Image 1 (tube, rainbow, N blue to C red):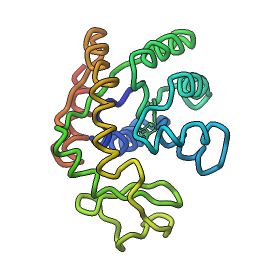
Image 2 (cartoon, rainbow, N blue to C red):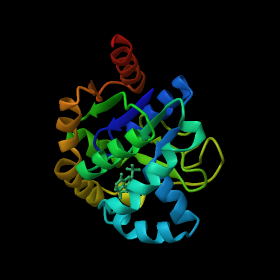
Image 3 (cartoon, rainbow, N blue to C red):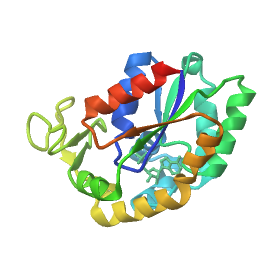
Image 4 (cartoon, rainbow, N blue to C red):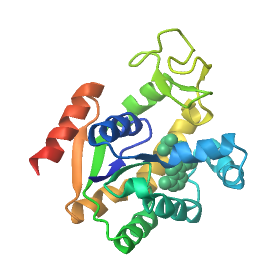
Length: 215
Ligand code: AMP
């Protein structure tokens, strides 16, 4: 199974991608996580990506396309993968099509998790991320056992720079301008599956799994 997760920042793509990756036993590839790991590791790529990310802008296509093309060519991606946060622009989608074709891979579905902007803004202000392992929580919907402490590694939880309200507004407008056209792109390719992302986390998962099964 080769899946692409679509949806605005904060729609729950990452959470659902992890669940689906566990269900299908395939790698979860999050370009946001890859960039954050590079920033933490102080790499050249991290240095280049950081200013864009902190401003709520997209990292330039040329920094992300090759990275994903290399990742999906790795051995563990042979039986499938879930792309979370990529593609985010039409040129990225075209680059992905080319890379997958060169590898003889067929992309199966693009899953759109649909959530209105107002709900996104409410949700993001409650998001907390672990400075240690990157796990994400929500103070209302997915609270850690102990406030501000990661259940998994015990490190501190923070509100990420790019989850702050002013950055979220910017990310939403970037999403509508640059990423939403992908809904049309994948509809035309008859790959789009759309689910209502305002439901509970487990209902969203059920809706996705049912939609993928039906086909
Ligand atoms: P995410 O965790 O997927 O919301 O990504 C966090 C940030 O990383 C985004 O706001 C962008 O700045 C950057 N980013 C992640 N994936 C991409 C991508 N496919 N294209 C451009 N920028 C990206």
